[in-house]
Amino acid sequence: MSAAQAEARAVVGSPAAAGWWRARSARFIPALLLSPSLLFLLVFFVLPAMGLISYSILTQSPDGTVGLPLTSAHYQHFFGTPLYSRVLLITLRISLCTTLVAALLAYPTALVMTRCAPGLRRVITMIVIAPLIVSVVVRTYGWELILANGPTGLLNWLLLATGIVRAPLRLLYTEIAVVVGSLHVFFPLMVLPLASALGKIDPRLEDAARTLGAGAWRTFRRVTLPLSLPGLAVGCGLVFSLTAGSFVTPAILGGTGAQMLGMLVDQQILVVYDWPFGATVATVLVAIVLMVNALSSRVLRRRDTRVLS
Amino acid sequence: MGGPVAWFLMLVTAATMLFILAPLLVTVAISVEASPFVTFPPRGFTLAWYGRILADSEFQQSLAFSTLLALGATAGALALGVPAAFAIVRHEFAGRGAAEAMLLSPLIFPVLITGVALLQMFATLNANSTALNMLIAHVLVTMPYVVRTVSGSLLLADTVLEDAARTLGANRWMVFRRITIPQIAPGLAAGALFAFMVSFDNFPISLWLADAQHNPIPILVFQRIANVFDPSIAAISTLMIVLSMGIVVAMERAIGLRRAVAI
Image 1 (tube, one colour):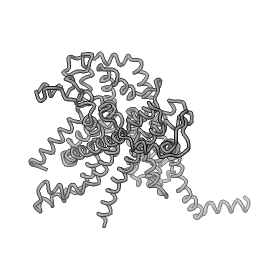
Image 2: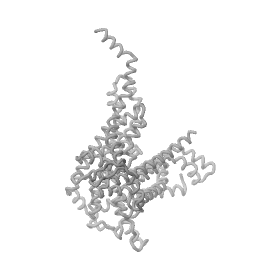
Image 3: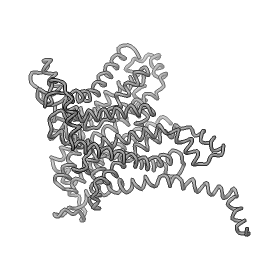
């Protein structure tokens, strides 16, 4: 063994070298584990999304190619045309209604889910989550059967048979139908965060409020509701942004009666082949969704700091 | 809880459960409807629609494609998502929070728009293999779910056992294979099942990328809702509901439904 080799072995074997190797592998291993997924996301998610958004400020020539000059004409067209503003308004209205009704219905369900006996809790959890695993197309088809116009739709048949109405109601192809369908699709995403938040509340706080003389409603309003706000914020953010971005439910249950932004994107790109305008509508939709998410995480953060201070 | 308030809450919850189950039960009921049109009240019982669907070559093709696509997407999502989940749960490094946010970001972005963006990129690059494009897109939408479910399992796995094995002389790979994997196996299984179902059910990505030869089941059902009015759609839907319920039971057995969907 030469002197140099001996020295090399001594260096590798020394605690300092081992520390160096550990420090290096500590950085190297996570990079190795993460690089395939992050690279995949960069190539097939970040770049295409940026490409699509950039299309919204480019010009499409008559032969269909998209390029310079930069323009804000598509946004002016979108916000300046009553037809498109109406689609935006309907999208916001349907998303807001769905979120509010979901929150109202989710509170009782989440409360029962967190306070009832384990057996019943299991059943409710199954019923709440199971539809999440069923395709949106299938669930929306079920609603089409229930809400179908004319005397052969389930709800109309029931209303006519019980004598509640004389003539069948027009239920399908309305905004209400889209709200009902969206509510069904996204309801679990309101109940589950809410149930988690409610589950974390110390029951002794409510007992204390009761002992101090607060009634059921006052206890809920002053103790349970404020403490469950993080769950409500998450649920509202999820339901609003997912409803705003939906396609299947408005396409089947709303049709031309309740056109939403997702359908407009589909129409502009697959029917009209107007890529820049389709990209513009898509960007507006993305902006709404990101704003709602930022808002809900701000509510969460503000609460955290208030609790700490 | 007790008294009239509790009764009121129970009543609202029961009504909500009925609301959730109604469209699924109605679909199952219509799938055995004897009349050639979907009408209420039902006219009689038949299993003919199932026979017709199972013999339908278009349906068979869609079923085969959807199954292969979901299997491929699940494999891809596991291959990319499991190492990523390990990195963000088991390693401390600068930018870990950012990496996690990035991995879950496809869940926040509207899936419909992710689909258009991919269509635009594939069209620009002249990438014309529908099957490959759809596989990439489905890996993209399923991977965040795998990351979420597997991270959850890793957080709950006991690291003391791993330290003990290491102290007893096991090397990193042995610890991983003999201690870590068995502990998170149910989580991996649940993540894989969830990813399979997310791909199998996906509509908003496939809408943009599918073609006549590569037509997943949800797209087929959507197309038929518009122009087929007999109960055969209800029969396909019922088969999909049954498959979903099978997956639900399997996920509940593996780690519990609530943890599997990780919301």
